[in-house]
Image 1 (cartoon, one colour):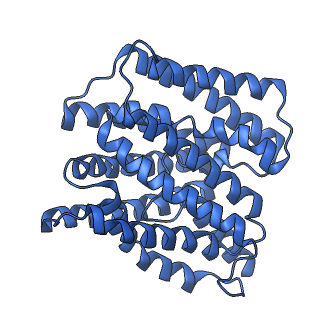
Image 2: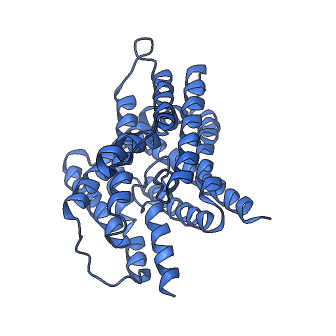
Length: 317
């Protein structure tokens, strides 16, 4: 088996696990507010923070070199967590993924003011086509839009902002700094919100939260292995397999069916996202699209942090 095939298979398994954890998010979302779910997911992510601190070979403190950018990334991550959990609980799984898949398009747009990049006509065309796909999914004026749709768009936007900030300051900050501050932000903000949203959690439900965090950890490790094994241009498109899992899980567990417009819009968004992935892989060594998940990590660290940590450990040897 070639490295690219092995990398692609690892990525497919990882994103399948991520999609399975989203089923738990949607299930628990019927009982608990997103604030409570994000808080306990984050709480269970702290052991991973300890592991990253122990494995990081880079000398230094946890004081950020770019405090304002780190603060902005914390806000974006907290916003993404709230929006993402609410969207998965309120919308059909496939529709949620279709909207959140617009995140790479927004990363391309944000790269202009934040990174000073030049986006040429072909990539602009891909962004416009992708946004048309979002409009096809949402069908404003012909379908009822609710807070769930707005939350999904918010999650895509927040994920794009967090990703582009990570790209801007990633070479200046320690990996653990990039990972721990968003984790602490979620813990503090969601912990404060528990005073207004807390509902006693059944033991079985808390077990599901623990399972969700464990699955996220395993999937993150598999994605790191996939990127370490295969080329990014082969591994990155595997994230779009989540739409298949979403369609299957939505039908099996929630009696959801994917309508024509959601399928068409998702196909348009995925096609435009794939085009941007391949264009960026040819034009730049820094490719946030290739290092981003379709759905941001909430309790666990972003895959990009793990990739950077693994690289720093290899360089330290």
